[in-house]
Image (cartoon, rainbow, N blue to C red; front, side, top):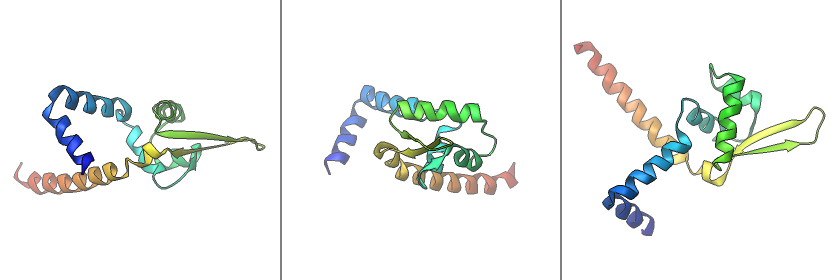
Length: 123
């Protein structure tokens, strides 16, 4: 209940509301961050597994986005001392907490697509 109350308080203060939205967008903005997070919601993965799960992402862009997500506390990178070296990525607690956000986005996207496709006949 206190979480909901706090959100309501933030919504009453436009400056706090805007700051909260900007903070979220700063961490999640870009074409590839949400697909990376979505891939990692299914568990820890190696670099190549993430790349294979996201069509058209280049290794360079994946590396950059993973570093950004790591700096922002969304992803952790674990290096194992094996031959060859093994590196795995997984979501932090903060990253995992995006699961309901992703679910809401998927639900909204499916409904929106249905409405748009339903209305394209009249265009």
